[in-house]
Image (tube, rainbow, N blue to C red; front, side, top):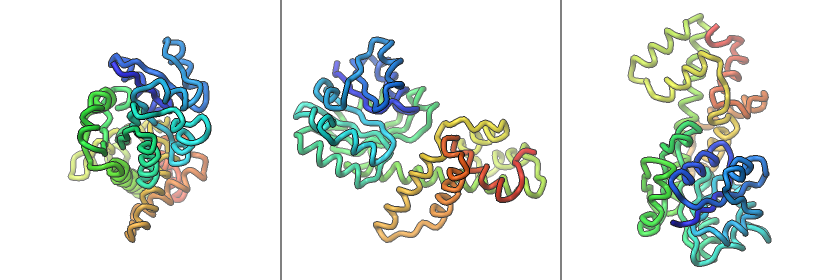
Length: 295
């Protein structure tokens, strides 16, 4: 069975890597900080000293890092992944990064005579642990055919979105919608709380009507419990909305609702809630309105 090198063992990457291990793949891991690699080392999984070493040993390399800058840091430099891969490797880029960063990464990987797949994921920590992330795959059909079983070990369904770059575009599409929905939901709850509407009654109305969605059901329960533990942090949602607005500007498109949502998430981060769940955008709106939802 192929050896898979996994780069980036954060809240999403670690469970994705464990699912590959559970599926029987030979696994090799690397993380820029040492702490997240310790459970893997304790389980007898080899930890690479650098992306270069990982690329030299792995048949397939998966990157799951924070942003454009982190991806560039992993790829470039004297110990970067690009110095370790060769014509026998396939690189699967699963981070949420911009289409431009994806295309640039693909170009540099292909220059090393290796194959590239663009496959970010939609979902949070729970689906990552369960192996039920939605994989947004972009690439040539024959390459996607070769890596489909690997992708299916981490998520289902695997949606073929088009060519390289289209996976990144689809990820910004869905996270744009996610951020807009979360911001609007939090704003509506604040509007209701300012008029002394009961939270349980508001949630019942949402779930009984046309606006019902799994997002509002899941996040509604967390808000009712004032549980802001990070499943998908404010700072990452802000980053994705920022990327979406930048891409829109590049193609001459205005996104007024998304721009407003971005500013709400930015304000929540500035208040110190950046590492809390995206539901903490509510805390910014509560502070402006002088109310607390559910009280």
